[in-house]
Length: 124
Image 1 (cartoon, rainbow, N blue to C red):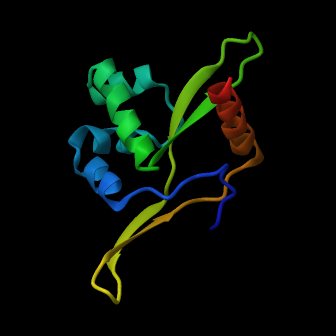
Image 2 (cartoon, rainbow, N blue to C red; image 1 turned 60 degrees about the horizontal axis):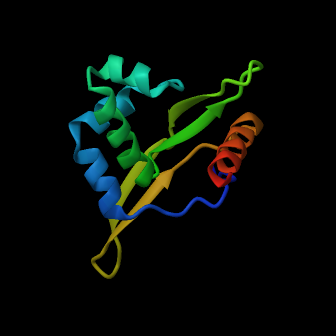
């Protein structure tokens, strides 16, 4: 299904392959069946928290993980991470080049609002 991203740039094939080749990144992806904070991922994957943030950056650069802001009534918003794909296909095109295709689900209104809020926080 096609989704309505906020200016999402297509990832480079090498970024995706590098992320998938990393055992810590794969462990993080395996844990993301629901949104999780970096600290929760660190504990679940038995990875130091500083390493977890580096791996989340790698996964974000590859457009495999999305950072969402959980808006709370008390004003103390929390960042949660979600897997941002359903499937990844690497194929050989007619020219003999590798082509990347990432299947994504349609985002919900809540996810679009969270993405918009994350963008506003980044810009300010």
